[in-house]
Amino acid sequence: MRPRAPMRLLFEADGVSCPVICDGNAPRTHAALASVLPLALQLHTPKIAGSHIFWHVPFIEDVEGGVDVLSAPPGALIYWPVRQFMEITFAPLQAETASVSVLGQIDAPVSRIAALGERLRLGAGSRVFSGQLSRLDGDPTAPVPVLAPDVPASLRDARLALWRDCPAELRALTRSRAILHPVGPLMQADAEARVLHEILWEVRSRRGRQADDTRRAIASMALDRTGVRLRDFCHLPGCAATLHAARDAVEDTAVPFDAALTEAILIAGRLAAWIDLLIPWNAMNEAARRALPAQEETRNDG
Image 1 (cartoon, rainbow, N blue to C red):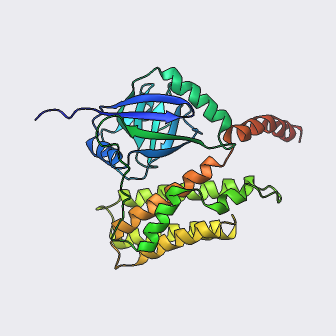
Image 2: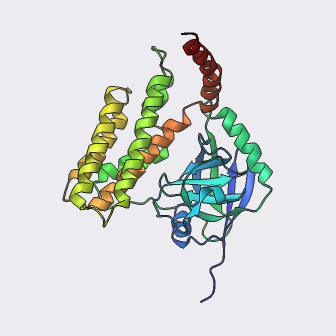
Image 3: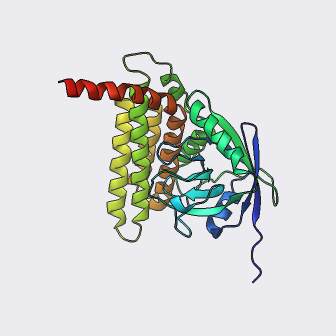
């Protein structure tokens, strides 16, 4: 059998243009990625690992190859299944434990991504760093949306709408000037959505090891709880309604559970991603660095 030719892509964002060669041993992920190209990107800055940029992708694949994220070299294009993030590294990462799929590497100086990463770190939350990932070979046409015929059309449409744009009520939350707003509800919503996303992925990972009734109950409870928190504490009733629609699909035994769970994961992940993009992480980190030493001194004086 002839080896498959590497897929060649073009990454573009904020004035940076980098060819990418996808020659890693991850055929399922390569195929899933090809099916959604060209793909509009919104870039995120890392909060834990440091030296990479990343964006959310609208598909779910299990890890292929299982490479320790800390061993990925600068310039690598990687996919983190747990959160459906695709990433480009530009320097050794800080301590983090994750198993990722290595898809390939950029065909350009890593310094281009490093400079973009620094602008992203400083500017994340003040504006959205948009971009595009497209093919330099193969079919350049726009992808056909995944219709998911086994789930209610209303839930599928809610997922597609959430992928197209940030919910208006999330943007409105950033304008609130009530006590400890917008930071309080934004950070609470960020934590709730991230945890929900990872719980749903864990439920998916237990397929074949745990009864579907049990998995269905766990997913339903997680979706319901997060929906309630977003509605009652974070002032996000529309986002909560979408999560509760996913809960209803998960609970409906007439809907194939794995199909409903896939929709729920993509919805929770996209919601978490939009919230993340609205938070000025660097400014908040600098404020914490200024405040925490004073707090320590206060405790010692007491």
